[in-house]
Structures are given as C-alpha cells and as structure tokens.
Length: 375
Ligand SMILES: C[S@@+](CC[C@H](N)C(=O)[O-])C[C@H]1O[C@@H](n2cnc3c(N)ncnc32)[C@H](O)[C@@H]1O
Image 1 (cartoon, protein in one colour):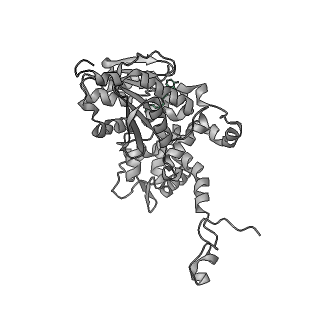
Image 2: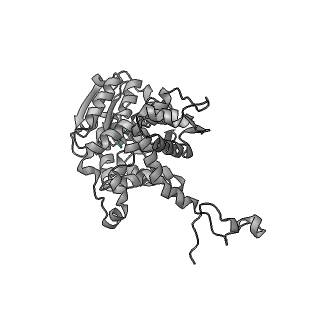
Image 3: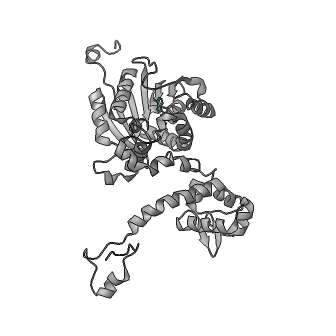
C-alpha cells in the first residue's frame, strides 16, 4: 500500500517508538519535496507583497527591525486599501518564510525585509524579485523545452523587454562586485585605461573603472532599447562624458583591434552557449592591447555542481528561457580562455556569490625581444 508523504519523520518511525535510532531502513522525511512544491507559492507570496507595497507601507507605519512588531493587519490593510483577511494570510505566509516579524498578531520588518525588500533598502531587491526567474510561462513548460531543446518563448524574441528590468534590478549588486574587485585587481592603479564593456546593461563594470580612474574612457555596448539604461546610470555616476555608446549586437558591432586595456564580458557568456561565448572571448582578445586584461564575470558551476547551487540554478534560469543558454562551468571557461591565448587566469569572488575570471593577453613574443621603451 502507498505510504504518506509526511514532511517530518512519521511518529511510528521515531526512535522513541521503535526503541532504537532510526536507520536507512526507515523512510526519509519528504520535507525536501514539500519545500520544492512550496517554492512556487513562496515566490508569488513575495511578488504579491512587493506589488502591494507591504514592506514600504510597514516602514511608513514606523516598523523598524529591532523594535517589537506593532502593526496589525487591519491597520496595514487600511493603509494599502486591500482586504484585511486576505492581507493577514499573506502576512502570515511572509512571517513563515522569514521575511517579516510577527509577534502576537502584530507585524514588523525584520533585518532581511528592511535591507532587501523595501524600495529604499540599502541592498534593495524589490525590483529584481519579480523579473529574476525570467518569463514565468517558460518554467511551466520546462519539460517541453527539454524535449524540444528550445524554450517556447525565448528571450531572444524580445530581448530588451526582458533585459531592461533585469539589468536595472542587478545594477547595484554588480556595481558593488565591480568596485570591490579593485581590491584584488588594482585597476585603480592604471593611468587612463580604455575599457570595452560588451553587453554592458547598466554598465556597472565600466562605471567602477571610470570612477576609480579619472582619465579612463569606455566604449559601452548593449542592444537598442537596453543601452538607454547605461546612458542613465553613467550620467547618474558622473562619467557619461567619458563614454562612447555603441548600440547593437555584440557579435557584429565594429570594434577597433588592439585598442583597449580592459575588456568586460559581464554575465553575458552563460546565455550564449559554448560557441557564442567563445566568439565573444575571441572578440575581447582582438580588442585588447598586449598586456590588456579581460574581466569575465558569471555564475560558474563548480566541478561538482552540488557545490555551487546558486550557479547551477542561475544557469538553469537561462536554459529555461534562452535559445543557447546553459550553466557554464569554471573549468570550461578556463579552457576557452586558454584556447583563445589568454594567460595568468585568476578566478576571484569580489563579493559573496559573484565570481570573476581575469585573464591577460600576453605581449607578442617579438615585443619581448625589443629593448624596453621601443615596444
Ligand atoms: C545579464 S545582463 C548583464 C549586464 C551587465 N554586463 C552586468 O554584468 O550586470 C546581459 C546583458 O547582455 C545584453 N545582451 C544580450 N545579448 C546581446 C547582444 N547580442 N548584443 C549586445 N548585448 C546583448 C543584454 O541586453 C543585457 O544587458
């Protein structure tokens, strides 16, 4: 007879009842399966809370982490103009998910909510959450994608529609990673580097270098419809006058050979598949001067995928919604870089879960033979 999938170990199987420690003869709890089933609901609970403005409204009502929760559901429902019993169910779900504080029927912000879920939080993910998984329909049709080897509604059909909100949502994280990368890469010590940022989005990598090096200049590329975001972000950071904006497909736009000191491929390779990623690496190689450096940021999968769950799932997100996207492994990328001719590969983690390969285009062997100062 079929057994029941209880999330916790069944009472009839606990050591107290059977008189000995449970062994692998006993069924495991089904909690991991329930956690996955709950994932869909959890995502929509959070998206609904953000759409309704729950976290911002709590902040407006004076809810702060560290003080006892004081807001009741009816009061918050009044503030938001929504149904109180429905809101209460949503608030309880958020509390269960660890995204709100709830004590005795009163609600407040916890540290997570204040930092990541309020619009003005210091590391707000409020605009990122709804767009991060990509088109939701593609997830419902994942089995079909795996059968056909192609998603039903690839992002490539309307890339700007997908990438615009995504790059706005990821900008602060990427800018932080790019800025922190200087601690290991010391690009701020370069006199006036010329930067090429392909698929730049809001151009966080170029902006970090431009801000660190007052003489630096940058060529910023992205698709029509997305590059406008870089116009805006570079202006906000006071570096737009040192940028040359080059809209278009990064596989085909014109790029001056051997003209750049830094080339950036920031989170573009895992959507491209091996052939596309290798073409981009080759473009970066051609664009760099000897001694120039490539910065290739992405979510690289570890030798054992279980060691890098975030990277595996970020790669999966791309596979679910792009024609060529796949998880890419750290060793695969290292191989592509070496095959292209790059040397001095380093893999760094400037901030948690953000990884970056740096690699240098070597000087030409004939240049090494020339006396110093004549190269
Ligand atoms: C995941 S975002 C990364 C943005 C930015 N480089 C970063 O690290 O935050 C990928 C970017 O590549 C751009 N992109 C995708 N395909 C492109 C193409 N064929 N030509 C130019 N840009 C492209 C997208 O518009 C998007 O801005």
